[in-house]
Image 1: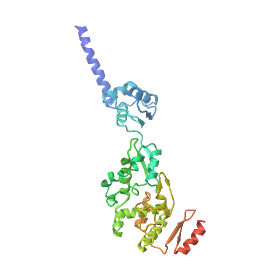
Image 2: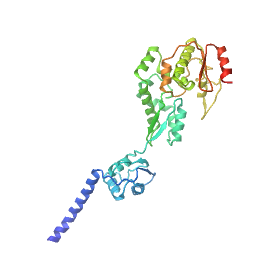
Image 3: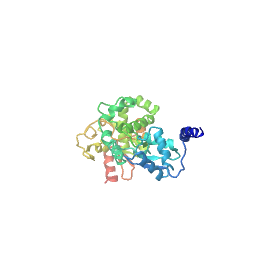
Image 4: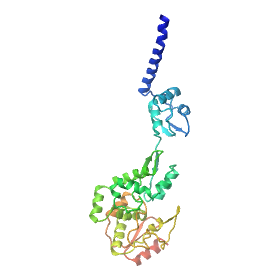
Length: 328
């Protein structure tokens, strides 16, 4: 009888042992910390991942890790990527791998970059989104989400509204995903007072952004940007062509750019009057403010000297003198 009781007790012992192990995991047992980051390669199975984690000092028991992966039903759901496991126990490690929450990559969009620049930088950082980012469909898929895009002309891109800043992007980001982050940022930067200033002037956001983008490419300091803004708006009111050199650079042939004052492009402000067809880059908030808050001056012309200064002139004769003095 005693022998039978011992035999009957064996299943109970294993049940208690299993429950004890599960309790350990439920309270997120923290392995002895030796390392923080690990790279999981595509195609690796759970056992190979466990080996990676142990070799990097992330865990000290492959068995415990595999048990947690099996217990949560994630044995076959662990994803490749680079991970920061600092301070995580087994349960959190498995959960992170199952969700594919790898280390975010940091990208910085520089004021004055256009969409092609951004797409190229994303490609250089390993994001396979270039074609999707540059496609005509991207704006159409997102414009209904943002009120500042409501006046965007049909067929227009998101150029001008992808706010230049530093962004943390997940490994598996998509073109709409990264564009949405930049658009959300732009919406926050376009403050209520700036929107009121646009309405007060009777202008639209696309008009302001077309002006702001030119200012971004042409001028450095906020003070000079506001003066140049006044000059360009004044030229428009007078029916003068804007003749902004940077608009010529927006014409592209493949991945290259061409400068030609006779090029037949709706962005050519030498050939066509009025504002260009749209923004020629993605400006920072100072350029947007300058476009909304122009400063009146006696000047009609300006140029950017080789040392970065903006040189102003009241008439074309003085402008030619400045060209000879500062550029030739």
